[in-house]
Image (cartoon, one colour):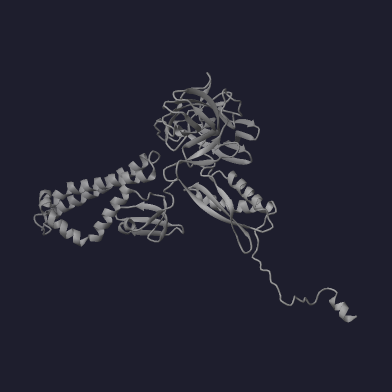
Length: 286
Length: 233
């Protein structure tokens, strides 16, 4: 009995008149569509790599990618004898069913779209959302990917991101940070302020405007407490913060101003008798 | 020091040394400036090294495109125009150029840098900050440290306006060099708190050579549209 391979393509799959051949066509068109989408999106990314900020570039690349996928899907659907006009009629009911079935997916999708257009966060921003702190790695259709400062990958559903309080540490151009500097009571506070200001002034990214402010904030138990308010570019503030404090400490010590240790003066009601002082032993022997 | 070099060369100026040295068949670019050094091996048959002043917004690292020059306050009469001269910081850019492409190799400068916020933290911009005296004539400058900016101020509003700073978008900056480094700019005062600034693509003196711009070398498309100072003058 002769077996013709092409006959396999004619075998119906059991759904309407759809044959294996048409199913294969559907799969091929969809696969080609995905490949084209990936190639085009990659090229869009490459072409715009130095022309657009990373956020806009990624948004555009994703938009191109999904448009091509949808286009491939629409082109491939007739292979499954799927009537798109029927889809419109059935759309209401199907939408209702799908809506209930995939409530959270749709919610995440819509939240993702809002996040992309409202843009409270951008790729690379340092944020805190839903008690997760880190930098934004990706804002996808359904989820947002955060890389924590420890380098850990965290995926947060977009619905959660959208409905949570978002703290974006780098949204503004500049931000302020504070140091508390303690000096001894015998040190000259004016001199300490002058030295601290001088060190801050020398740092390129400690902003000239708004001007830094250094002042005696309070008189502590063991020290005179100075406070320094310093503005820095939001994207560089951590570097400035970690860099400046030690420089201020070194400059103060070079000028004889020291950071005091905690100390307590103790008074004894009957005075304090110190035993074993030098000479005491000899006196006893005599 | 500014100019084009092919193969090996050596240029020194006070605390700056720039050289391309051939050792064992390898061409090595080397720079030393105020104790800091930079070195790269160059693999090139026909390439040239171009050294010229560039937009001063790259050091210690690139965080902004804006340059702010602050000067002693000037009161400008309604309708008045006046050309003054300011100093601006110079950064030195080193490029490698071939027939088909140009790339930034190194950027360095003498002295220190300072940055400031122009505007509010929410809407403002970070700008490279520089203080200058207002000069009626071209002042003398160290060409590797400072440049001369010819600034034409025109008050188009009906009120007296006090001006004490000018902010530019450095992507518009056109720098020329010769005996000194120069740029030509305009400042149109629109209201008491707003002004439009822009650079003019023209040498301050005839014979000056136009610098290769960093934005050209980095292939970043920029539209020369000037900058609207809307956060005070």
